[in-house]
Every structure is written in C-alpha cells, then in structure tokens.
Length: 237
Image (cartoon, rainbow, N blue to C red; front, side):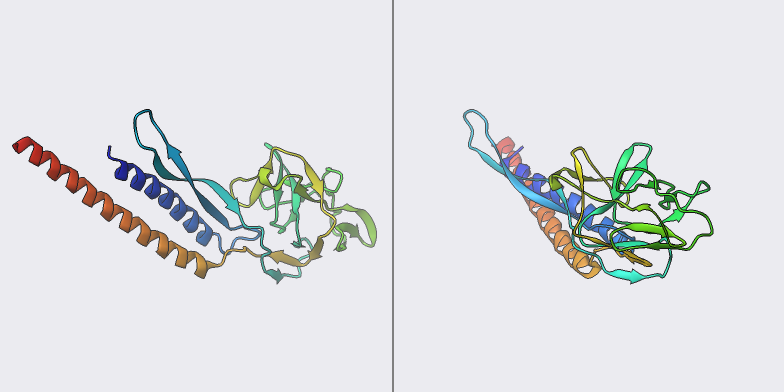
C-alpha cells in the first residue's frame, strides 16, 4: 500500500472515532452528572530499514472535561450536587467507582443508593444509612442528619493522580490508583449537576469532522484511481 494511503487511512480512523465520541456527548447532553469526552490526536513515525520514515496520526487517548456543569434546583431531599472538584464514591459489584451524578434514593434497607441500586459511601468508605420517614438534611461538608441527629458524612473523593481516572459505562469512573478525600468542595442538597456538554459546540465540531472525513475519502479515491491508471499503463507497455 502506498504511503499516502497509509497516512490517509490513519487519519480517517481517528476522525471516525472522534465522530462516535461527539455523537455520544450529544446523546448525553441532558444526562445528570455526565462529563464531556474528547479525543487527542498525536503523531507517530513509522520507520523500516531502507525506507523513508512515514509520519502518521494516532487518536487513542481520550480525555474527560472536568468543567463544572450547571446546577439545577430540584428541592429533592436526596438530590445532591457537588460544587467544586471531587466525586461521590459508590459501591458496585466490580468495586468502588466515582460519579458526579447525585440523584439518589434509598433501598429497602435504608441505604442511600444510585438509580442503579449501588450504595453511596461515606467519608470512611461505609454505606450511608438514611432512616425511613426522617427529615433528612445535608450540610455543605457532606454531614448528613436525620431529624436533627448527625448520621455520618457523605464522602467526596478524587484520584491522587488525575491521569488514572478512566471512564466506564454511563456516568461512572474508576481508577487503578489511590483516591483521596476532597476538602475544597461543597455538597448542595436539593440540587443536581447537569451534563457539562455544550451541544452547539459539539454539533459544530461534528460538522468539521464530517467535512474533514469527506476530504480524506475524496483523496483516497483519487489516489486509488491514480494507482489503477498507473497499473493499466504498465500492463499495456
């Protein structure tokens, strides 16, 4: 395969991946606690003995925007939004996970849980218990009280190394590294944090990617036709 074709295909593959990410961002523009995802393009050089080096593009690194989403007041006793950095810590069958989605409820046992039924953990890593029928209030530091009696403190955590944060399905994240408590953030009761996706900017970027992909496709077709014509000329001679 000719070098221009290699270069074009590597770029087309990256653009196709970015288009999928943009579409997923737009689809989650109204998902509570969703964090916008992006794709980073980089250059790598392929070399071989006796051949000229070939510069190609690679798009394998995804990044997540940690920009604060807008807060919407719901007045729900078990709706919480984080103002500042950090994540809620939840317990799943696959281990502990981090999330910014704070629309919670209680299960049959009185544990504070996510819409998927995963238990929310306190500052010490234990499940948060909410007595049924009690008036629940949460202070800005996460201290949760029922009928005026403190029960515990909802935990806010962040990865010790931000580069270890990896997106999972939906609004959950995991990290293979250590997590540490967050002290410079507030929890707001009766609010939820909206997605930080700007749909207009994502659609504009999608148009740019589509045009770039079409240009690459046109170049690939032209290059293919050039090679075919050259082969036909060689056969005739």
